[in-house]
Amino acid sequence: MDVTLAVRHGTLTPEHQAEVIGLVEKLHHYFERLGALAVTVDLGGPEKQVEITGHADHKRDFAAHAAAPELMPAVHAAVAKMKQQLRHTKESVQDHRRDPAHGAGAE
Image (cartoon, rainbow, N blue to C red; front, side, top):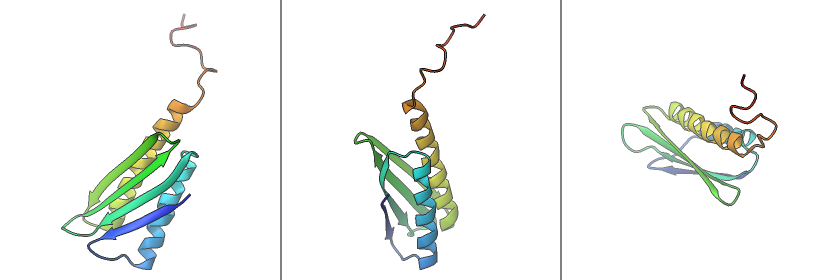
């Protein structure tokens, strides 16, 4: 999986870059069909803003935004939002035919 990191209004230390990319790369475990991800970090202003965008299956787009006074809490919040979207999408895509129909057998 390819992760692209872009920074606006400043620079990140190599340690922060590695940590951000490491956290974002783990998102592939939640939805295997996920393609390339783009992370944009905006260091301008009082709050650091993080945006993660991704594309999967040639039709599904994902986006998560977060802002916090410090960089890493904003990254963690954006990753958590993206995880939730990926989990929800994976559940909706999975084959649920093994489950009984709603209301069937409820006696």
